[in-house]
Amino acid sequence: MGILDVRDVNKRFGGLQALGNVNLSVAENTVHAIIGPNGAGKSTLLNCLVGKLIPDTGSVMFDGQSVLGRKPYEINQMGISRVFQTPEIFGDLTVFENMMIPLFAKRDGSFRMHAFEGVSHERGLIAEAEKMLDEVNMLDKRDFHAGSLSRGDKRRLEMAMCLIQRPKLLLLDEPTAGMARADTNNTIELLKTIKKSRDITMCIIEHDMHVVFSLADRITVLAQGTPLVEDTPEKIKGHPKVKEAYLGEAA
Ligand SMILES: Nc1ncnc2c1ncn2[C@@H]1O[C@H](COP(=O)(O)OP(=O)(O)O)[C@@H](O)[C@H]1O
Ligand SMILES: [Mg+2]
Image (cartoon, rainbow, N blue to C red):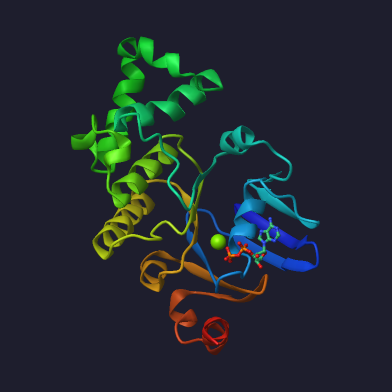
């Protein structure tokens, strides 16, 4: 059994079977990639993992507890954080202020803008935010407006906002989508560092095979809502069923 266990999950949208008999087990402290052509059901599966969608049948267990039907803050409290396809940051706030959001939310159970008024007294939280920024190499951009950052740095900030919550499981939906190659490589390096320096399990949905093969310990190939194969990157490379899934998209 893994830290995350998906059992016999089915999800229909009207007449469309978006997920069909999905079984998936993610081992603790590994990086598990889910790949597959557009429309394969990757985002639907991810939404089921964070309680955002409830499958028609089946179970999703994290650390021995069901995630189904839980509110976003409950999912966070269980130790699950998610990096969205489009970075969820506040462009009008500075990098540092963005970092304070998850810290205040954790302390107060919610976030209110006026929380910033007392920020100079929050030495412990300030130090924590700065340490995290340093860890992701963004301390020099502490006072930049988040909206002015490059796409790569926005993503980096968003990851820092997730990591400061000390998640046990980090879910990433196409973390390098739309990025320049240099930013993609920086993201790979950042994720490698995170993997080495913390006890963390990562589940990553990704189109860029370079990213997948650089990071993943195991890969599940999803096609038409059903896992085709699950194996190590070495075995997945050149696997006939993987070619089949992707050629299907090109055809
Ligand atoms: N809320 C929804 N309502 C109806 N159909 C949906 C919905 N979400 C996804 N789908 C359909 O389910 C299938 C899987 O979608 P998705 O999980 O987004 O695939 P992927 O992330 O792999 O590209 C697609 O055919 C998509 O059009
Ligand atoms: Mg998707």
